Image (spheres, rainbow, N blue to C red):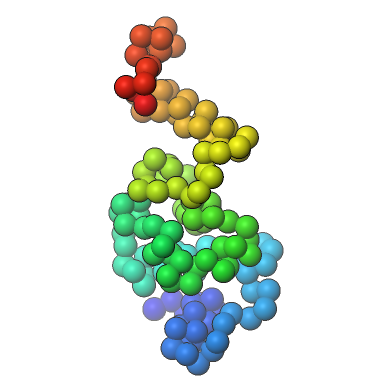
Length: 141
């Protein structure tokens, strides 16, 4: 078992010997590191989910049931952003059963959608620019 401070505190909370994490424990850059460590511990060790199965087995509900919602909110993160923070560059939004509410909405959501479409066309499907008008349609999406 990992004996780091955040994991020990988490176990004390789970066992009922401590009511909650200390005030401001998840604030700022140190808090972000605590959150990453706790998220990875809960997913990989407590829930015993291999990294490659995270998109199929992890949902916001599952993470929130395991007490990750309050520290994620302190950092201003939703479910999708928490996964992106904890596993940078390892997953894409379309790998998951769900993304956070509003993920595709607003200017930030618009940019995410543009980047996603570009990635799918360029990296996954490898469609040359000249073929895009013939191959990209509603069926493609």
